[in-house]
Image (cartoon, rainbow, N blue to C red; front, side, top):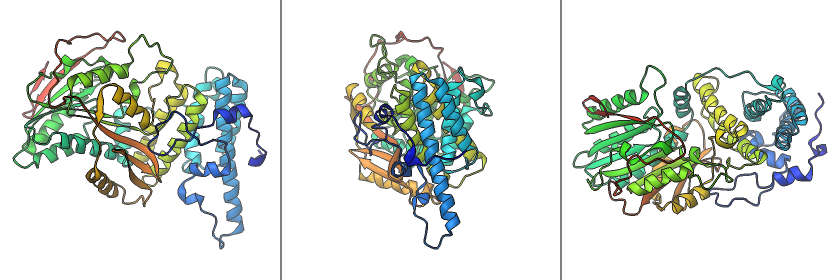
Length: 493
């Protein structure tokens, strides 16, 4: 198939207008739209290429090498154009044109490398578009990826780069600062997963001058689906670790299908008992968002959860979210935003040097699942509703929370930890600070943003009583809790 020179590619005005504002603004992103215009040209496409490939060929390079590089870049630009055009056709309901665009994109992917560079990320987006087209064109659907447990994917994503390490360390520092001088402390983790965040916090508390406080962690997770009770297993490991460091410890596991199924009574918080409280949310709040045109008479899950947090008046509420804009109703807009975001993610991951191993492939599968959700999901079926920091600031402030700014000390600590975590990645990663928020960036493009918040009067346990068993009116959940002390005893609550 001959490649059409980019300058001859047509783009209708409607498509160009739709793509306006598709490029994520610099950190922080506060406005709903920005002044950058997206019209796929070589200059703009350079932001999708790994930084090392953006340099002009050295004079001594062979002419054949230079020509091959130009051909590859031209093919990559054509590939991006076809994927965007395919998305626009799907949005307008022209599935025949979309199928043709996708077939051309597949032809290009068959002749360029898909293990690195733009071919790597474009391959996932092409598969997602094919999955979206599946009802109309079954032959367009890609083969299903090999199954993997979400916990395994999450664990390998943790190992693949500094993303979760940044989230955990910045949140832990804010929690430690909020717990200064407290003898009894309680952390509610909105997504315990494997509990990877908490050994560092437990160790820091064990080093506190005057002795460690009594620590209680409430870990929230889904109902067990197999023979292994993951919440219980994680709780036992944390209890054993705390015991080895001499930290008085109690763990409670709470099973809910969705975070908006939480109620005060599940957390066993006694108003006025002097226990300092912290809530922790790592990449969870965006899953509670809904479409802008959702029925306002039905409480949104995010509002239910933020109301619960505000009522319980924590000393600190730590929030880490993707710094991206993937919650736009138009498919074309969020597709384009996602393409740029995940190009930076895969580029940064490749710099860590795990390419080809199990860590790299499973971490890639973790991001692939996010891409498929963004591209294929609509309405309540879409969970990955990432939004930029500016919108989170507005939403949390409306809920009655006040931002607790990160200071210079936190910036220095985060930067030092980043340098230790990315010794092989050169200078690509950085920590950005703006208005009291921190962001992990790749070549100055923010990937994840961290903030800390407090509620008015947040000096300990919540002062709200009498709301036990409230029904949020949205969904029924099956709930349960398990308690483990540092002695390893288990009690079913």
